[in-house]
Length: 366
Ligand code: GDP
View 1 (cartoon, protein in one colour):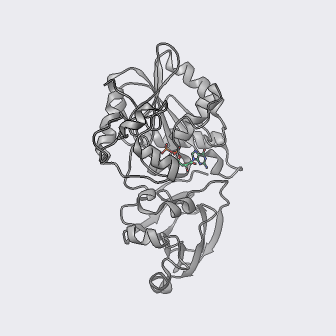
View 2 (cartoon, protein in one colour):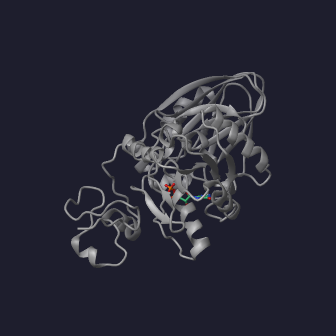
View 3 (cartoon, protein in one colour):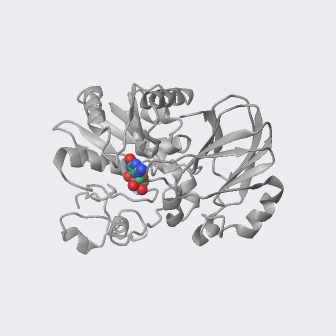
């Protein structure tokens, strides 16, 4: 039988083992647009099935890129740069040129200076050992910045193939769908979803007779918050429109709770502002540090939610990270949940996030 590939995710279709990726019943082969059982369920029931791929297998698949020549387009989620940047990308892409694309620009406050964000992204990539040819900011969903980016891709690729890479949930499928829709008018050519890990193989989208654009499998990074919350809560914590930052003036020994998913204790220092950039649907509670533990115990999943009920079963316990903040204009980042900008250094904070979710400091993005 000639190999057939799923129209939804690009995995090779097989009809023998329903438990393995790419399964479709033989009867499905008679249809024109064949999709695998997993994509079928996703499309019709909005239901995601786990696949027996390990995180390393996904990275392994990316290694194919270093054996070929082409332009690499790395997509990151501006809202979750730390969670969505693939560190060590160079190992998988070899000497191929890379352009960095910050997606979900639409969630940043309108007052943000795009030039500054681009410089910030370039510098942040450099610090992770990746020199990029160029940086672009887009909103795949709102179709912003796509024309400029596709022109640049056409120039930089020099007639060669294009590999679009990114971690799960950066909006890779949305981006490629928007590209295809802009050029061909076909909508939703690739399955999109809220859920991590949808794209299983390389999807080949012909650019001309000699070259293609490849959608590569989404790399799974375990320190992304998305892996620890239910689909319902993921919708709450993921911003879908312009973030309205919330500003708190705190004295030391005060605490902020971000739902019940994260917590920030102001341990020591002069009265200070904390500018919170989270999804507008997240509730923030302020309390005294001495009351914080009991508040958490009594109200987790209730007043302090998300986590909702389903997430409570998945959620690892909160783990603390203490930081002495030296520099002015520092962001304290809760990977996938958002960040808190601290305008003036010289304070000490303790941040709590579910074990496994990365908490880090960076130069302020905004
Ligand atoms: P993939 O896993 O990288 O293929 O990501 P998807 O394309 O499935 O998108 C993941 C989530 O991000 C979905 O909920 C999308 O609606 C959302 N998303 C994608 N692009 C954008 C964007 O430009 N802005 C916003 N706000 N959300 C986006």
